[in-house]
Image (cartoon, rainbow, N blue to C red):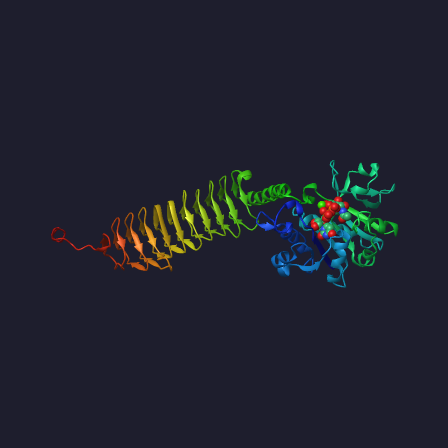
Length: 455
Ligand code: UD1
Ligand code: CA
């Protein structure tokens, strides 16, 4: 069946008390509207039509070609909002799904059940609307689903317009519908204006029933139809999504020692037999291999860890670690840090825009920036690449098997040859050839004393 979707996203979101449009507030790594688009997109042949209003430029530039757009410049209600979307819909549609951009917990599976119900009953030419329905003891804020004596859906009545009997109804309207496309096009322009001055999309239900057309419901899980209107709701929705994400990883073979204190964003990939200790924040395009240990208390942003890595009490941003590399406690890998296989970076090490070759060790505090360090290099405690002269960055190169003594300053641009040795406290201002030992301030080649030549 040819299916289109309309996502309502024009509201002000006043209760967020924010300069940012409500639907762009991030939720576990994705804006609210992104969750709504992702939920419905797999069921469609073309991108959903997003009805934008408040903050429309930002919403459009975020979604780009993942959405098509209709503008609602005056907020005259949900019916008016969908009316604005009609011209953007293709002509040959069978059905139109309507959802909200501020309902991030709604899953593709539940929407698919709604569409399956519609498809199963579509042989009946009277079918006009399939909609989700919930049962809830606290009905406040929801339209009530009113049924006839025979049990057919007769109307949705908004809370403000309910009679006392209707207020007692516990079957409620979450606001997610699948309309027969032609029927929607014909009837939407004829919605009456409500006593509140709005065009209620929900009034279509009574219109359909009045025409002898059929309206059917599919039960929805309560948790999924949760609307976000303020930051308390945002935090609660975040809790649900985080739990879902952690459960996915647990079932895929990842140990998450304390799900409640672990924050894993939606796109993060983690291999089996990896353990995530409490207090970890894993964000963006982070990918973690198998048999890694992350945490306790580490933040990884857009960072890639190969198998068997360890990151303890550390912050890693746009960094990469090859198999068996370890960092921490209290390490900081900044943008472009790349640790080769089995590199050991100990406490208070900071690495930026640098490669450290396999087996290299930097056990204690130090800074390596804009450097290319070979394999099996020892970087002594307190070593610093002086890579910035106040104007530009310069490069440091250190060859394989070099030994850099404690507290050495490598003043870039500078190159240290293979197996060279830098004495403790040296300030290296000139290139050091391979095999050679230098020391002092500024560092000089160590010449053999007579005694040494003899001995
Ligand atoms: C709506 C339903 C109600 C349902 C409830 C579920 C109507 C008339 N009522 O009520 O039956 O139980 O949702 O949450 O539909 N929006 C626009 N443009 C508008 C008005 C709204 O884009 O002119 C968007 C809002 O941004 C929001 C969504 O539509 O995302 C729902 O609007 P809202 O005003 O919250 O509807 P409710 O009064 O909650
Ligand atoms: Ca609402």
